[in-house]
Length: 110
Image (cartoon, rainbow, N blue to C red):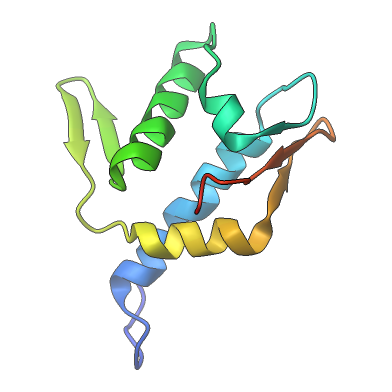
């Protein structure tokens, strides 16, 4: 990761990179109608990769910790700064999917 500067640490850069990956994952979902992120997490998905991603986000919402999904199970991502991720979501307020529907952050990042 890039060089640290002042109050901006490597974990911040890493967390922002992972945040963009999560947002891109959400943007790629083919949702039929606009929905809140919390409502989205209550749905089940037939695609295994999507279901795993949704389950990891649900765990992040409940525990405040992000996990990696591996063939050996879930492993805690110790470098991810959840507070920074939640701040980005709060400021974004919603995510527009590729099909034009919106996912409202709602109370997910409260």
